[in-house]
Length: 253
Image (cartoon, rainbow, N blue to C red):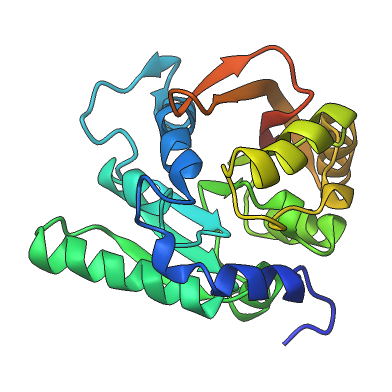
């Protein structure tokens, strides 16, 4: 067990009370479910290109090992597995990991999906310490960076699990006045898009600072793009502006 940790105890306590809500697609995690419409194609298209050509397979991620860090209730892990990936969902909150496991059992036993997912209740640093030889084709940390207690340590541990040429996918929030007003105050207190108190604006990070931290841990940034959520129709879209939500894809050098 590491004495240095990326897990934020206050965050863990908040999420532990929400474990029963993960798979209510019209509930408090509605925006995360909706985000799959943009982040799944983004991840899949990036990883399924072979010899410069896009895979035409109905399971383009077959054979790919993906680590979903901060997997919560499995909202992202499940669709990645449905595209053929072998997924490990890493989650520090025990209640969330249990909710994900319960949902997987229903999908596999009742729906007969046979999804290849293993949910692990662990921090990334403890997982690295216990699985030193583990390597993945991709690591995804979507809406996670803004919740960790030590971002530098988090990225360093992500790097240890990725060999040269593998991909890191991040989505997070910029540290701007716009994000403080819209993503925290409005989203939490007025629109009810996310639970009150779920975000700490001080943990938000600019794309420039995040890119610099990635470079120091052996990554080359491949793309940075903005994301915009419309609460009126519950849809996400790609935009040039990165002042609130944004995504980064980086490659391990």
